Image (cartoon, rainbow, N blue to C red; front, side):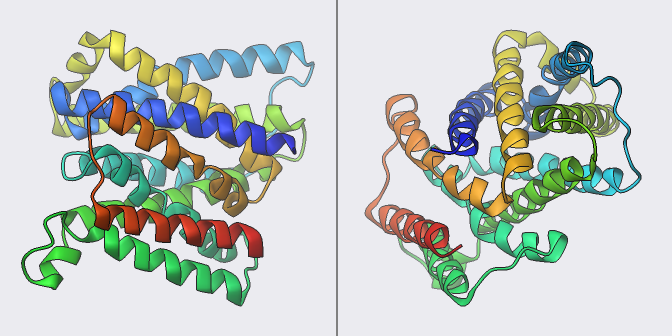
Length: 300
């Protein structure tokens, strides 16, 4: 088994734990922005320390960052902030497993953005897989009761948040891959951790500025719940290091496809931690979306 696959499995597990903790913060204590900020404020200093230690210990020193790095980094960092906020907000509308599945439309969309941003190519069978996945998304978009006009059942706030998260995560994955690949020198982990350090520093500053401007007192609340928020930061750091390393090693669409094991993790957590049940219609959507992802893996 190739090393990038093992790294991606670790990333998916850490990310599922992080979303579980953020769901807890969102539903009990913090705003959507506050729960999102928690992942950055507690992980950015740790990532900076790891990057500094590794650069020194490996003898690679300070990075030589080209101008082409910054557009990729800013696009990836900004889109990830917005995507995370979409997912956290989505948890207030639908259950944990379905919320994660909505977010995983990034797998289908990352192929498109990989083509637009990095010139990656996908085939007609891959397009068919995307269409099957869209059918699954429509199933998931329908409300569990299945009543009311179909337009209102499909085109709703949960749909917008879920698809928004998928689009934005698709952009961020390719942005991070582009940023990491733009660093000409250094080994794979060096390029990944340097990119991650720059991204998390930017995200922390950007989110802090937003909270000071729009949600006075929320930063204090994030610091007050440091026990849970700190775990959000730790799981975020572990997951991000794995994601960035995998994106440096392999195409973002392939990495995100393997990351679909997060669906299984989220079903287990949703059932055993939050006591949630998945409806028959939602199972149909899950199967369609998962089938499209498997098909995408086989044809790309």
